[in-house]
Picture: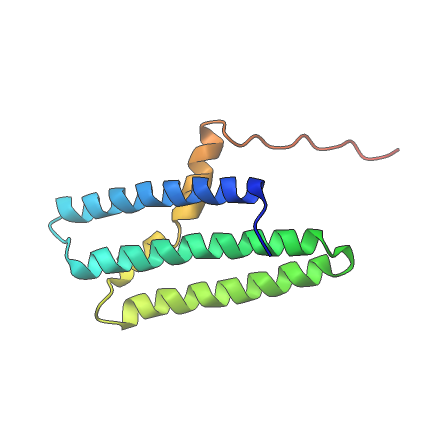
Length: 134
């Protein structure tokens, strides 16, 4: 299954925003005098997984849209698996000596931060709610 153009556009936005957040994180660690290889690798792993997780979300949305009867099941299963994988990455960030746990865990939030900034800047506008049928 290929990602639709609109999903690819959103993935691109998230990837760019995540890269900007990663650069800011590395700069902050550098200013604090704490930048080392574990921070760089932790940031890369966390940010890379965060973008991968968003791609998986895109596949899920497309698959659910194509199967109306099982859409809720597909979405719930995907959410559970993606959250489990996210927890595994965060735990590995703290358990593996090659990764900085804080840098890894923070990077997992970069897509959410990107979406929030895009909403604040007006790139995403909430859809108007339909009035309930009388």
